[in-house]
Image (cartoon, rainbow, N blue to C red; front, side, top):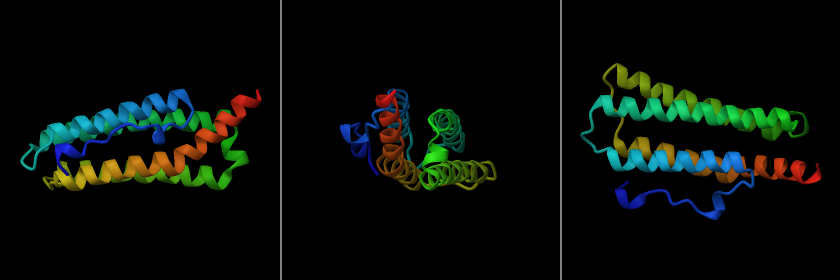
Length: 144
């Protein structure tokens, strides 16, 4: 992945829920910033900082989505979708924690592997999982 392969925000990422969309924009910008800062020879300290900052913001974002799921009874009305959604959040967090643990023990992850995982996960999660949540919340808000 080169700097030319930055994620570009597009309307296809819009979920229709302002607070989720704003946080997704921040995540896209954070990943693009990581893309520009990281090289194959980046220090482990820089990798640790980037993964720490990303995990911290991702956890905050997941909490926002999960609060919305509770508030709009997504869990009750769409238990299969919400279960998958929550599993994806946990799996992402576990993978980033595993990368961080590896870095602490001196095991490097390549720039390309890290960015490929992060960008691929975010795009897939927004397009296939968050869009369903967004449509559900938008319908609930529209009916209110």
